[in-house]
Length: 195
Image (tube, rainbow, N blue to C red; front, side, top):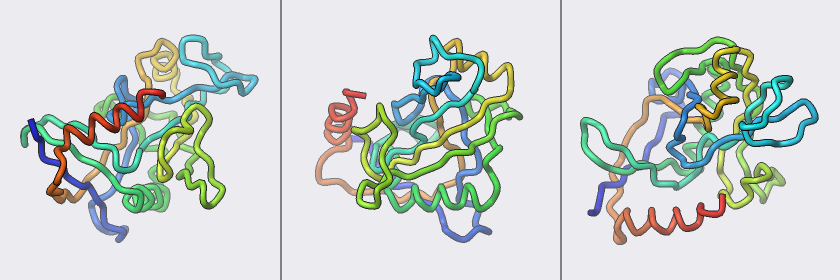
């Protein structure tokens, strides 16, 4: 089945409603890649053995040109963000002071989470990808959050939450493809299989 593919964008204008205004902690990140937590010795560990001291989660929030499957009232389709859009999203997210806008599973707003680390990988500028994620492309947006909310941190530790998922309002432009979106997705999954 060839599903439609849409490019999602936002406007740079701070007054425009197109923006990412929150980041959710989720069980299955749409980008297919989870995050890591750090213990008191700053050693990266999977959540199953994380230490309570630091309460920091770090990982990719957005991956450029990655088709993301959607199935909603509009039907089945794929969406993606390009590098420029991801950069605009990150800049606008911080310029508008959204670094404490967090929720669980895109539903329950949560206090006590602060996004305090943010970088977009760009090897040509000397901005590396996070260790364990070296195979992700340049343009990937990485976030780090301090989780001071006890209930949310318990869900991080028990493996309920495995990654970040951005939310906001976007413009959608359908992309007419020569190759099917399914072929592209199969190739991207093959490339991301090593994560």
